View (cartoon, rainbow, N blue to C red):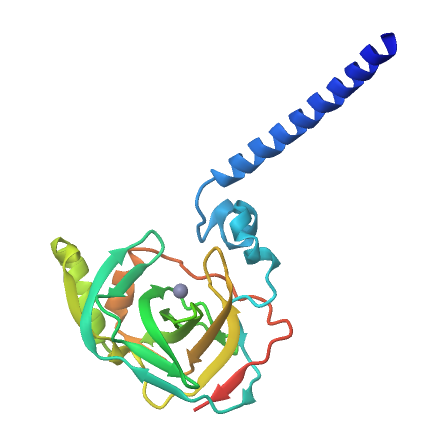
Length: 256
Ligand SMILES: [Zn+2]
């Protein structure tokens, strides 16, 4: 009897220490899970994204992360068709970006025979990708999805220069404020530079959860926004760029 009682006692001790341990783990997890959202600066900034939530682990563990500094490239043809045209977009002001969502799925791109639909475009400032270490004033990301839920993102650099009429429509809408619930008509083709080399590589989302398996196509030639346009955008959110990530074993391809 004495033997059974002491065995029971040991068993209970083990059980309670296990449950204390698992309670601690759970509360730690909840603590992390309920922690502040990710940001671009401070303790919840890019260097810590991978530790903020379990879902963000790829931000620190991933081996094919974006953005990158674009240096050496291999020549390779990239059949790319861009079918953008005038259409209506809804503007969403997010904490870290301004997002434009097309009202319908008629803006598409075609990469090597695969069709992708434009889901949204948004801005970063300064640019996220670098070319030979050079950073532009802004970068526009056009996010597309194919029927198998694979993503392809086009990155366009913006440098200071002349005013862009289409971006000015967005600026004017934001200034009016009241019309934000309405859609605005934009021809986003004017955000695509003509006669530009394109750099393609396999990368990730540049914001948490930093999901990999994305096709990136970065245009080398920048477009221009005026000083005032860039300054206006920066009032919303600045800086909003993730630092460049290690290239690891990836090859960059260059095409016309
Ligand atoms: Zn982006």
